[in-house]
Image (cartoon, rainbow, N blue to C red; front, side, top):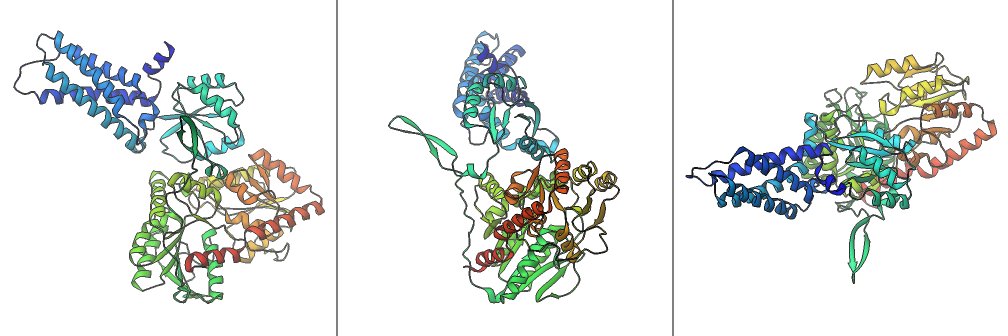
Length: 626
């Protein structure tokens, strides 16, 4: 009885939506059947239509048309829909038999056929159009999470950071409960799925899966890089013996789609950055470092610059600069400049090999490819996860991902976590080339007057002030410390004035907040810090963290998979503000010899893994062939 009740009781928001659709399908099917039988004088009693609608809803629930699997694209819908249509047709025939002026049995047959077509069509439309409902504020998927570990809190932050998601996180189930108790707690929340922590033991996952059987609740877990190569793709049978087929996330698309040609003499164009000399962020430093190394090897380089960031020069240390205008707004700055750059490159007969930065610029790739250019595209991190982007901005970045994997000559990622995302989400492989770091000896660059702090007695934070980079968390954590090390926070909030004011209000009175600092001023700060704090949640490989490691800093790093990939075993990790407070105090109390040993290990790790020379060699091979 209880199992039958699960099939009938409306438990989720999607159940109610599908029930309304089925009622509409019933009324539409009755109307269609009637329209095909013209010239006859007959009526259907209202109670008959109510009965038929109830039969369609109840039978649909019983045969699985309301299950989660029925709402996934590609699901087999014909068999359960046919069963429901058959029962509905038989009930319709009964209604005809007891009605004094019934429409006849031909109407019942037509009604059953129309029900079959309507059920299949309605599920097909919901499976493929449910994301569009978020544009009008409807997201009927509900999920619970298992446990409250730092990893789960970080995952929830990633899932809920951006507005307009087509789901809601509605509750947390304690980790460590017996499987049956856990399954009952999850079912009581009336959710569509349970999100599991990646560290859960496979035996516990199996026990929970058995306990949840029959509740029609999905079990979800975020993939890890080591999981991608050993995923169960299907179940097969050999001589009647069931076997699991392990195929991994075998990508349908390879990373390199167009063969490289040695055209070094014609050079390379770099598009999608703000320009050089670097005066903003990671891609600008990336473009400058690669351009210097290419030019030193005799390869001409053209870098496209935005007018409001450019110096106006036509050349910089042997690198050709092309300055073009743009529309300086958050949504249009990047793409408008890249479109103009691509048009200029084509019309002036620029280099045949193009290095394009940022997946948001992917719409220009088809244009460049049609003009005979070979495009190496570095997609950057998962920018659409940032809370600063609305539905339009996130949709643009997701569209850019879709275009990137289908049109780029070579797809490049800068972190294994991002590469894993593209393999699982887009079934596309990529070439993983990390970011580079300049090796700066401790104390080799002096501090400038702009930052009046004492060498070795300050904590350094470098990042744009965005909510995902947690400048407010860092300011509050430092203010809560009992040590005398001051805080230097580089950066500013370009698009969030309220956040900037909150950070300045939270910072301790002795904190130094000079805004953005570049060149020798920046190099001096990372070469003389007590420690470096990295609190970024979103993205792949973050340049500032690698640069701090290259300068031999003790790095205090927010614990995320991407950050652990970079920081490895030489960084110290924190999950929240109180943990960061304790790490800052611990760093200030370290014995000088112990601190020096940590700094040497960090510098050695950065030199071995993040060398600009190695990065340049990798891109040279991708652009021109090894």
